[in-house]
Structure formats: structure tokens, C-alpha cells
Image (tube, rainbow, N blue to C red; front, side, top):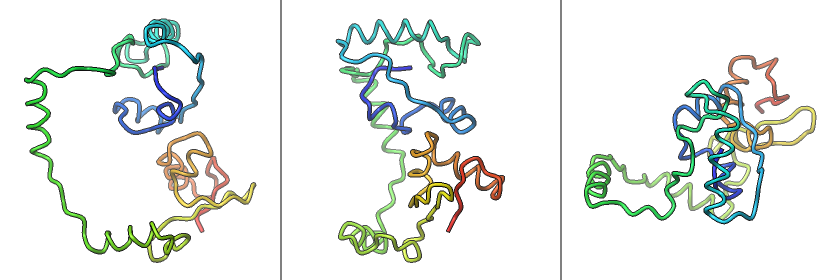
Length: 170
């Protein structure tokens, strides 16, 4: 449950670990309940719906929200101490330079020279045997089935002939 844009509602990045565990196990469905609210109205409605549907971590419901809502990070002004912590954490990150091979591949991909070339770029191609639709990645197939790509991958790995998706790896 949360405030955001439609793009945010389907974005699986920047989510807490608990959210990913639940989604990998059960998948998820996006339902946009209300539109056109002011920020203040959206905050109040978020709190209302979180209380209504209940938080999973408190054994009150099924939502994976870790707070009661209304505490998003829009227009947050960080203290100097918080900024120092962020700088220190980023300084510890190991940033590897891009290899020349990857730069070449990205260049070819941008120009369209690698489209459909899974052999040279090692892309999986999945076929839905019911609809006949091809997917170039687990992520793309996951979006079509309303789950995370990792879920599709797990379905295919655990039960390749009886997976829940009608997909086969070509």
C-alpha cells in the first residue's frame, strides 16, 4: 500500500527485503484505489488503507508495509550528519569499471545490431505455448503474468514440465 505514480506501482526496485520475499513466494497484484488526490489527502488515505487491510509484520493483515504510512521520502531534507553517513557508505562501495566487451555490446544493442541475438548476448527466449507469445527475458514474462521475473525463473527451475506459466525456454 503506498502513495506514488503508476510507474512506481509496478517497479520492483527499491523495495524492502520482506516485500521481495513475499512477492517471490506469492507474486503481487497492483490495484489503484484512488487517483487525483493532493499530497495531504494521499497521506491520510494511505494511513487509512494500511490500517484497514493490516500490516503483515504485526500479524494484523497481508500488507508488507513496515510503517503505518504517511512517512514517505518526498521533499526530505537530510541533516549534515545523515549526508555524511550516506557519503561514507558510498565511499565503501566498490565500483568496477565497465569492460570493453560490455561497452561494445551496449553499443551494438543501442544500434539494434543485437536485437534477437540471444546466442551472442546470451538472452533467454521464452515461449508461451498457449498464446504463442515470445518473451526476451524472465522480467518481461513476469510482467505479462503479473509476477516478478525471478518467480517465473523459479517456476521453471523447480517444475520445468509442470510450471504455472505455460512457458518453455527455447
